[in-house]
Length: 113
Length: 116
Image (tube, rainbow over all chains, first blue to last red; front, side):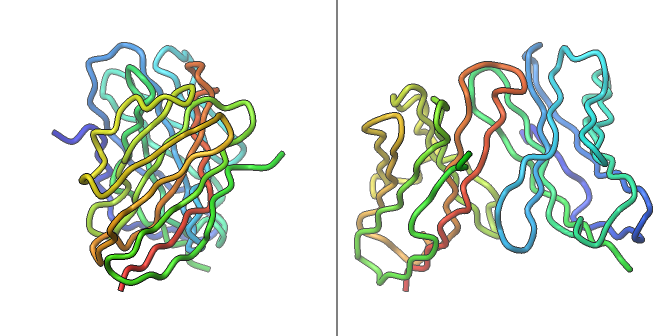
């Protein structure tokens, strides 16, 4: 069974608008971590934001915020004020138990000028 | 601070040849991960080490693949013999052992492997 699901293969957003990338996860471990990574066309994997399962507040990092809804097992990434440079592949990932991290299939974001 | 360093960045080889990919993790990190990324299968974890010890190699596709971490600052992923289906981007990542945000994996730039 898939543990990380990203249901949007591709998304379009107008420059300067906000966009939400969806991620749902499945785990029975009460302690886990959720991550988002960005992969631009150049290929590198860039860490964006982290949310721990016991964190009371939603994580924020600059224009990135994570909408963490624990009961729904969702960890959506919100990018505010989109920029052309935000066009990339975005991966949601989860670390449970040990140190193994599982990645979703990714969402490709296109920012339109 | 230097990030995760991988070499080579690109490798083109012929089927049957041995390929060795190299990785230097971030100093102070004691967990190291090897991933393979393809269009068909996405990002797959091949193996990970903690304190230089292989913890989980269940993702290694077959015996042609082997990985070593002789010390805290160096790891290799070897494919022998290589096959065209091994063509992919191979990433190395490292993290601290602690849970929480410090457990974030930081990725190297990747090695793009093409097996002809």
